[in-house]
Image 1: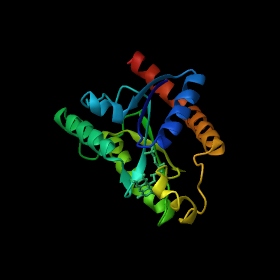
Image 2 (image 1 turned 60 degrees about the vertical axis):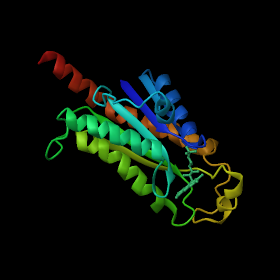
Image 3 (image 1 turned 180 degrees about the vertical axis):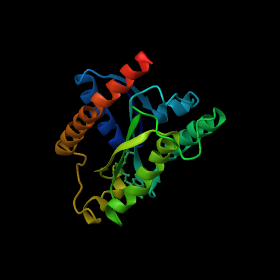
Image 4 (image 1 turned 30 degrees about the vertical axis):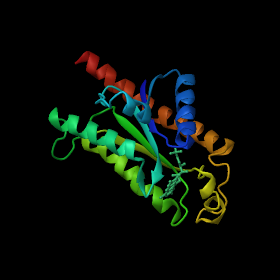
Length: 198
Ligand SMILES: Cc1cc2nc3c(=O)[nH]c(=O)nc-3n(C[C@H](O)[C@H](O)[C@H](O)COP(=O)(O)O)c2cc1C
């Protein structure tokens, strides 16, 4: 299966998750292309063919309930390109065999997981609009890294999140990645065979 692994990470927390997804996919025999959106900002963000891969993983840290600003910019570019190419259709018809898994790392200092949901939904809408089915939505605790924000790692709605995402969180990411791939594999293969025979 072809996997696209897109992420934006300000302090490296989401990158830990993206690397775990990449590792799990490779070990499962998938072909993986990883895009670090913040790196691609420097050499001009480009439109990506989001319909080429079977499953796209996309993740970002949460900043005031939304993805980090470079991810917002990246999504704006992809949406503009999709519109220009006539890919955004009324009713957003489903494209068989195309799936996305959307996740955020977040600290939830004030209202907990409710802070991650808008970011996840926002990123997911790009794919949903294209007709790509959202097959997974994950909210993963990610501690504040800046020194002056450390107090919020113990006083927020999630309680103590120091060191998160920790080894257990990353193991969960790995297991859920493998679980998702397995659940979609047979369907994706069947669509490809039908395409070849058509
Ligand atoms: C300046 C700043 C603002 C943040 N704002 C929020 C927020 O509004 N809600 C939230 O749940 N987490 C917030 N966080 C926590 C981050 O979303 C969390 O640490 C995340 O794992 C960071 O991921 P990244 O390093 O990949 O960008 C904030 C972190 C920083 C540094």
